[in-house]
Structure formats: C-alpha cells, structure tokens
Length: 151
Image 1 (spheres, helix red, strand yellow):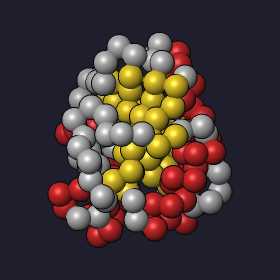
Image 2: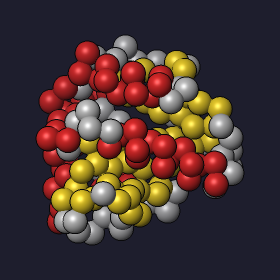
Image 3: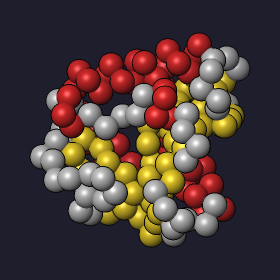
C-alpha cells in the first residue's frame, strides 16, 4: 500500500471519484453536497492523493489551499470493501503531515451531519479536530458539520 500524488487522469481514480459523488448524492440533499468534481479537484490550489495497492484504489483525499495559513481537507474516501482497515487513518496522518510541511497552521473540513458520516466524524475527532462554525464560503446548514484543527 502506498500514497501517491494523483493527476486524476487514470480510469481507476476517475471511477472511484464518480462512485464517491454518487454516494454523496444518495445520502446528502443536493443543496448540501460539497464534494468536488474532477474539475474542482484538478485546480492548482488542490493537492490530491490516492492510496493504492498495485492498480487497486483503496482510498483518496485532498488538501485545498484556502489562504497562506489555512487549508481544507476534501474528498476523503475509503473503498467500501476496505473500510475500518486503517486506510483513512493512514491517509489523514499523511495529509496532516503534508499540511504542516506546506506551512499551514490550520486545517478545516466539512462533513455530513447524518448517521452515515458518524465514522468520519469519530476519525477526525480522534485526530484532534474539534467542531467549529462554517469557514471559507460555507454557511450554516443542518446537513453539514464543520471541524477544525490547529497544527
């Protein structure tokens, strides 16, 4: 298993992200869906990582620059067959380390408020993220939860 910076051109990661967006559409009202599409993930302010085992995509995550000191975690996902196997923790450790190396002093994220997202919220809490108000362009939304961590 390794973590690579991904250019988002391979069919495996494209399919993986399409499944992610479809899953988010199935559990989140459209007005509360904040998952970035491929175009959004390919922007220069976003670094995208894929966790792979050979050609198999096990998970992914991204870091979006908000300003010189603040970045947002985006598109964290583990393949359904590999959930609860430590992939998300491994990837989140990597993203936090890369954020520190890049000089960010704060990381924030948005995730869902539904039961479906409870494992994600527990993961972020385990890594020291705390609940916060909306940040960047987000607004209050009963379907969203906002979390942040000082690095």
